[in-house]
Amino acid sequence: MKTHVLVVAGSDSSGGAGLCRDIETISALGLRSAAAITAITVQTHDRVEQVQPVDPALIAAQMRAAFAANHVGAVKIGMLGMAGAIDAVAAVLAEHATLPMVLDPVLVSSSGHMLLQADAVAGLRSKLMPLCRVITPNLPELAALTATFEAGDADEAVRQAGLLIRDGACAVLVKGGHASGRQATDILVEQGGAPTPFSMMRLAATMRGTGCALASGIAAGLACGQPLTTAVERAKRLVFERLVKER
Ligand code: PLP
Image (cartoon, rainbow, N blue to C red):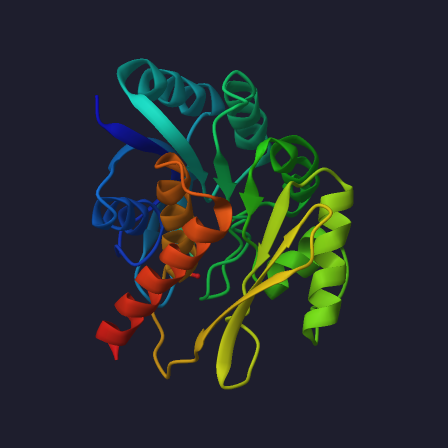
């Protein structure tokens, strides 16, 4: 049976981010996707017009059916929207605790719309983070998760990631796309190890859904049994190649 990545995420009608981007990425890496939709969003590339959360019981039922139907090799978690969704997702994933899981802590769209209610951040940190092999915040998300200011340099970003590790995260990949400089550097911080930087030339291109694609790419790599650093490296290269085509 072909290995699937279970994507637990919101839909985006524009196709720029969310579920479409996830499936596209997983497919580019040769794997199949199964899906549990957490929210239906009405979006163009410039704005979020509507968000319809899916009932938490329906999210859990989609996940259970996806597990029953397929060989799931990894899980990618994206937009969750509300605290109820986090509880439902964490409860199902606790039944599959040995699977590699990648959490993209989606908080706000690039157009500025909140995609996770503020009171749900604590649940993301306490209930989902400890289940995951890696979480992939950008600098504003890392600041929100640690209730601090956005890191101004790599040392501060590593320090903030350390706070999440102390709270039970296994590894944190801090995405440097929001920083400046000639290189776009992501830093992987793991429990007990030295931080590992992953650098790529910064491109004068923008593309929506790069965070979704990176997390899905990492999940696909982990589903194939790759070590985390290899999965990160390959997913980053895939996103970079997509960005080159967008220029
Ligand atoms: N919409 C959905 C459903 C998402 O999952 C995400 C990010 O993960 C976004 C929007 C935000 O993407 P962007 O910041 O590229 O607009």
